[in-house]
Length: 160
Image (cartoon, rainbow, N blue to C red; front, top):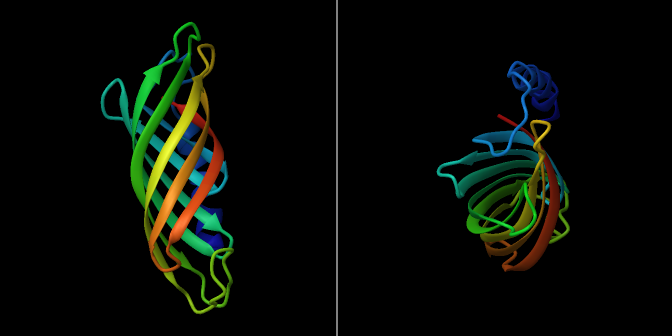
């Protein structure tokens, strides 16, 4: 998987930088990196002016995962360029064979499926094509290691 990431990341950077730089008040699509948990590559696309779909491709803690979220964005009064958002989604993850995860002591490659919530704040720079968001993701693991977890992260995206 690391070999694939080494090949895809340079192509993604070239693709992103091929779009013209311009100031953004709002955006249609953003792609970037997410730190925290889950960490990885994030892609957010607005379906309408206030609703967005976000996908997170994550690698870490001995697993590979995909998270999909449906979000509703609302402006924050008296704070231009800020929105708060909430939503729901799901995750699918698989542990690497031979690796332990923080939520399981097994090392033989497990499959995790669950429901996710999201609550966050996003700032879109008006003078640059960048957005920054901070959010919490409470999750409910349903398949393998059932339980509730509270995750959080910081995302930085190039928006176009």
